[in-house]
Image (tube, rainbow, N blue to C red; front, side, top):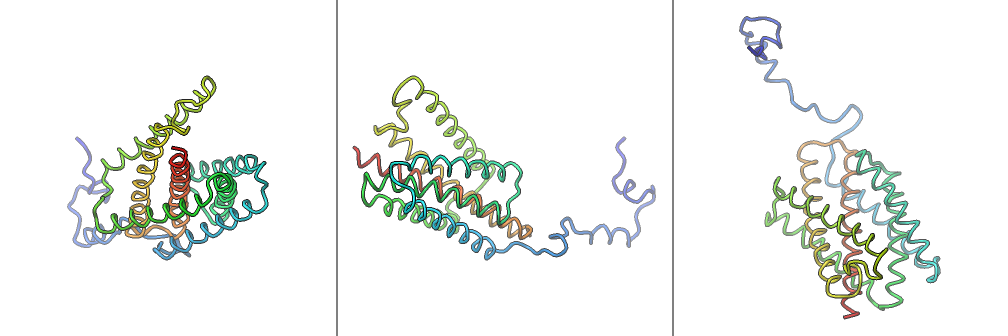
Length: 257
């Protein structure tokens, strides 16, 4: 027979006294952040996200001005590798702080600045269109989240994670296909398949924004440590970068068709 948890707690077969019951009732399930810290607030997330965006824009502007167009690919690779390495480290360890997050933003800024300059040289005006599209999608998803039009449920999360892994898997297969055919599977080329794939990625990234908003709101509601704000801001930045790149690629494909 399983041991009664009350008996296990107090070491006696006798019924607990009123004082002992009150002690059990008063004991909190969560004692709050560690000593010397405080709860995370929305201002914490906004400030940290703003700092990351500022570093990204500054690094992107520097790459745009300093990296020659003929060598943008080298800067792009450096930015992508640096950003990917830091991103994977923070994602798997769930450890994010100011140094890591701002360094991640700097690497991503170099990558975005380089590739944006390349696109702008071919399609004048496309960068401002992509930035505007990214802002509009982000604001739109924030609106539908706040009014409750989309709710983050366990089913929503499972479907979203499955879709993200599916897209990632298709990208990997496409990369392998490039070894055998010039255009791979065609999902990153200039044809209709590329347009459809970009639209799918934009839709998944938009839904991922809803997930990010929910993570932030639940963290605030559940009394997360203020340090979690860096991790929440990092997650939001990853989605915004992905969204911008997909919109940039979609606009480029549409101009070719």
